[in-house]
Structures are given as C-alpha cells and as structure tokens.
Length: 424
Image 1 (cartoon, rainbow, N blue to C red):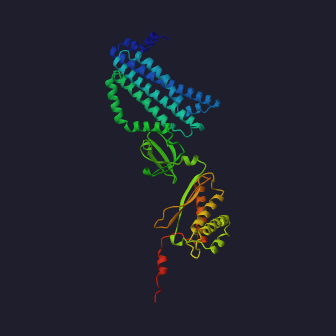
Image 2 (tube, helix red, strand yellow):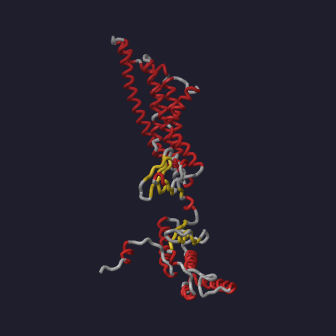
Image 3 (cartoon, rainbow, N blue to C red):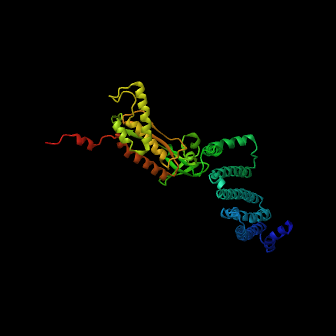
C-alpha cells in the first residue's frame, strides 16, 4: 500500500463528518483523534506480537545452541528491546500522515520518537555489553579481569553520545563547533570529575595489573583486609575476613599505598617471620658436662661434636686457660639453641627448604634478645599456615628450658605478690 492510499484512508473520518455537515476544523480534529486511538491500538498489538514471537523465538533458538552467549542475551532483555523497533517504525511512518494538518504537533511527536529511539539504542548497547560481561566471566582467561569497569566505561561513552544527539535534536544546533564542544567539555569535567578519575584509574589498574578479582589486599586507610570481589569504574569492593564489605575508590589504588598478597599466593611458599624474646641474664657459656647432656638431643648432636672439636683445637693452639670459661672460645646455650631451631625447621616437612631459611639474632631490646625465625611454609592457606606457625613456636618455646634459657615476660601481679614477705 503506497503513501497516497494511506493518506486517503486516514482522511475517511474527516470526509464523513464533513458530509454530515460538521464544522471543518472540528471534523479534522475528530479525524486526528480517532486515527490516534486506532494507531495506539495497532501499535500495542504490534508491540505485543513482536515481543511475544521475537522473545519466544529467541529463547527457542538459544536452547538449541551450545554457546551461552545467546542465553545471556535473553536474560539481559535484548529481544525485548529489539521488538520495540517494529511499532516505533509504524508510528514514525504514520505520524506525518495523521498530523498533516498540525505540523507543530507532528514535529514535537517526531522529535520525541527520535529521542526515544536514541535511548532505546543505548539500552540495546547496554544489553549487549552486559551479555558480553556475563559471557566472558564464564571463561577462565577473563575470570580475574575487571570487566565491570570496561562495561561502565563503554556505557558512559554511549550515554555521552546519546546526550549530544538529544541536545542536537532539541536545539537544532550542530555540536561540532569548538565553542559548543568546549562548553560541553567544561560541564562534563565539572560534573563527572570523580567518574573521570575512576576511568583513568581503572585503565591503569587493568593495564598495570595492579589488582585482579580474587586478590587478597590489605588497605589500612579504608580498613580493608580481604578478597576483591568487584572492580568497577568508581569503586573496588573488598569482602573482609569477618564477612563485612569495604568499598574503596578506584582512584585510591593508584594514589595511595596498599598491600596486595597475590605475590605470596602465587609463590611456592608463605613466609613465617616471628621472634622469641630470650631473657638476657639466662645466656651463659656451656661447660663440658652441660654439653654432654645436650648431646642427647639428636638434632644437634652432630653439630655439638663438630663444634666441640673446632673449639678444642683453637684453644690448644692459643693455649687458653680453661679454668675460666671466658678464656678462649666456648659454646653458649643461646648459640646451640639457635642451631637447634634451624635444624628443627630443616627437618620439618611442612617448611620449604628451597626458599630462604634462617634463625638470627636481632638487636637486644628492653624485652630481651629477639631470636627471629625466618622461613616459608609450603601451605599458603591462611588457617593451615597459622596452624603450622603455631606448632613451630609451641615446640621452640617448650624447648627453650632444655638449654637453660628463659623466655622474657613482663612481670604480673602474681610475680610481685610471691616476692612480698609473708604477713606476721
């Protein structure tokens, strides 16, 4: 049916009312009103049919395919948005015919339709972007990528184009001129300052691989200590170990300092670095009798014997007077304990011997001499790591007394009361 035929039928009510002797202006108004009512009915029917058949057909098609992409398209309402274009096409075609006698109203309605089409186009783009995000999240390759940030960046870009087009439709002015673009840029920079900072930060976070989904991070400034569950344009969401959530501005990840534990998680071991404070007055030279007693400790028996031969050879060469232990070279209970602690770690099957392992002195403090244990566990899982660490220090703390050493501890009220003279 050509356009002239459609115009002829659209004026049927006008001619009918005119033939009945009705005023021409009133006949035109009633003709437009009736045609609008009919158009609305037809458009609603077309919209229902289009949505019904397109959505159901798309669902049936997606069920027959192996890929999940079309399934996510259905979930993101892509067929529903596409179905709206058919009734919009009918409206866009019929409005100039129905409102032929009302050009101003025709122009307003067509502008409204154009704006709606632009918004509908953005919704279609959003649906495709969400579908792409959901689809790629199922792939192992993209599991730790901040896909949400990319989607938000593209959506801001899409809405920016839509806003420019809508302004162009409403004002009729070209947005190409430098003045218009400059003013628009100034407004956008003012309004979307935080968004722009987040946009830049998201790109840097992604390109430099600063944070991934699933990373364990510690950000003291914001009280965050847990796993990253979401990275978007404006914020990074962290689930803390107490199951609370902390939201961190994305820009803070490049502006402030934080700790990312990914290196530890990907390494062959997790570090133990903790000290035992030894009471300084308990440190002493070991006599021959005490050394013989310590030889019963199997882990250090070879060391004591080897060290004893070296010390004796040195003392003989130097003719050291051994009536006093301070003369010449001697073994100390703390030195033997350090060797024992190191041997214990080497023999521990839960400690990775291929990584750095050391037992060392730190500078003396008012709380004693720190003996630091530095090693790496095979198991990096938090609860297992803490259990291994606790077992090591349980054993070493219990072993201290076998070497005649004491662990430093601040006195308590009970210690003071035991020193007080009994009441008369």
